[in-house]
Image (cartoon, rainbow, N blue to C red; front, side, top):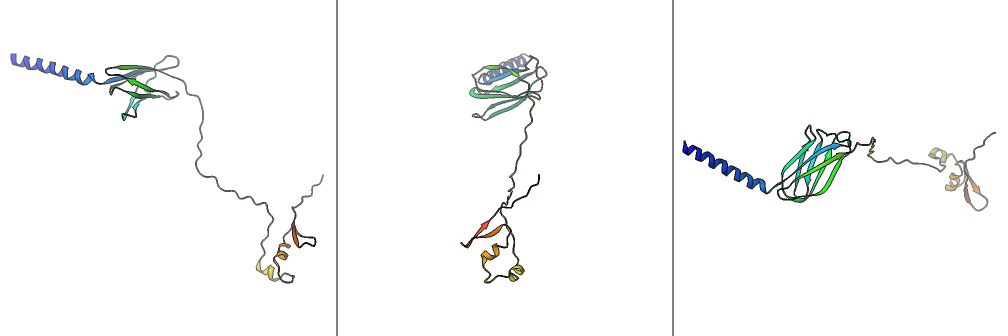
Length: 182
């Protein structure tokens, strides 16, 4: 019986010493999430990150709006991001946690503004705008032309709005005129 008490006492003392040694080198981060009126926000998503150390913890607040991230490596560069439905995102950066420190954060969420965001992806199709006057001439029309030598400029004269420009041999391209009546 005495041996059993001695073993039990030794186990309890050594277990407490081992726990205090492992818990002594780490820190924690706790907090409460409130709305702008001071009411607690339950089930909010809390992200505790330290990108430099590769730490990423995803937590949720309790019914009392409390979150707890224990056993964090003491360091600088922590950031806390809180998201809750109907509220704007809360974020705080560059948090430094010291050895053995249990840092407490009081996060007050603001009501999200109502907005709609539309994201359009894809490419705009090319729109071809044709502002010239043109006409296709078929082989049959060329063969039946009553002109000597079948010159190219003579074919151009078949297009509406094209006229010879005096004695220079050049062509004149005129815009269509629309007659209006009053």
